[in-house]
Amino acid sequence: MLEDVSKRFKHLIHGVDKWSLRLVDTHHEGLSVRQDVTQPPRHSRSTGAMVTITVDDASGYAATCDLSERGLRAAIGAAGNWAKACKGHALAGLGDTGTARQKAHYRSPVAQSWDTWSLKQKLELLRHASRSLHISPQIVDWEATLAYRRQQVLLLTAAGAAIEQEFFFLYPGMRATANQGTRTQNRTHGSADLACQGGLEQLERVGYAREAQRVSEQALQLLAAPNCPSARMRALILPSQMVLQVHETIGHPLELDRMLGDERNYAGASFVTPDMIGSYRYGSEHLNVTFDPTESEELAAYAYDDEGARGEAQPIIREGLLVRALGAVSSQQRCGDVPGVASCRASDWNRPPIDRIGNLNVEPGAHSFDELVAATEFGILLDTNRSWSIDDMRNKFQFGCEYGRMIREGELAEVVRNPNYRGVSETFWRNLIMVGDESTYVISGTPYCGKGEPNQMIHVGHASPACLFSDVEVFGGA
Image (cartoon, rainbow, N blue to C red):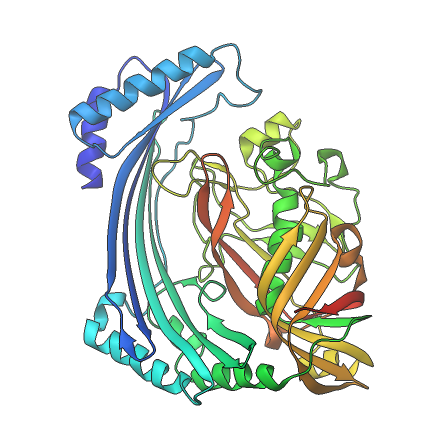
């Protein structure tokens, strides 16, 4: 189907030196069993095209879900008119659309495809998980979910590029809600933070079948647990919470278009400025962060971004020093060719590509989990994000977690409920004192990263080991 549309488009486009066509076809299926009751399956399909045309120094774009000759002709005309209207008013570096030349094909590695299991088998897995979650009358709500997404993207350019990429996503999840009187506590596993690329084989990697009872047991523990104490202490942050920490306090602040003010009237600016790249101490010498779209299991793995730039692993922070921003070619040019990455992506056919976070990973260190605990005389273990708040410069933050456990004299101690912590991005990462090894490293991410006007909800990958921070302000919630 995409090939037929591309032939139709090439027949219509003429008299334009620079153009690109991005075709996107997405299938989604969602399954859920809540309180042992199978919910109606959810199916959706979305197909459309984005046309971009460049005239001199200005680009215009138009999207359409009408892929007939009439619909494509209308989109070509609208994109051309916008480019002409913007002529002479474009920002520097925005005139390179349609220059990619590669011919390539990429496909998410899949060992066991979604279709190898029948609907009955998938629902039986969820029913078993649902029954395993309901271990007590105090578990008043519980749910097991599994969703799948297949997306095909074809990028064509006037310069001859033909880049076809096929992505397969899996979203496993479960949750349990415990209640006693006026007290309610939630515990989850998977859902957003364990979404990944791949097939049904990923269920084993994330421990889906064996985690249900633990989820509910910990929800019950939280019901009986004391409130988290308030004090400055060491914080051992597990990968499930590091996803949010990396995303909000490293990922978004380092988006180059955000530094340039593109997000200022929507989701805020950044405390980082382009002149800080190459000289700013972002964290302690233990902090090493890499942008890596080649990590194939992560949500934002790809061979080429949506402008046709090849995705390659690039250092972002090395031994605490900021060396590169998360900005694609156009943003790099606007900043005077500062170093960036291939990270220009769009959420769907009806959105233009902009700078996005991609796969952003904290590199493993040298310490086992037991060593991280043993190094903590007084502190707290923090697991799974529950809430987040950050200022419009992506600097001051306050995050809440589902599950906390005190650490006393180098040993795990009592469970505490409603753990929260706050800090300042500029100093928080400088208090990183130990980084977990490969045995603590977890690949995860979120499919719900919002940015841009109109909004674009996109997949972002994060992988991290457990990390130990000193002098963190921890406090209890309601």
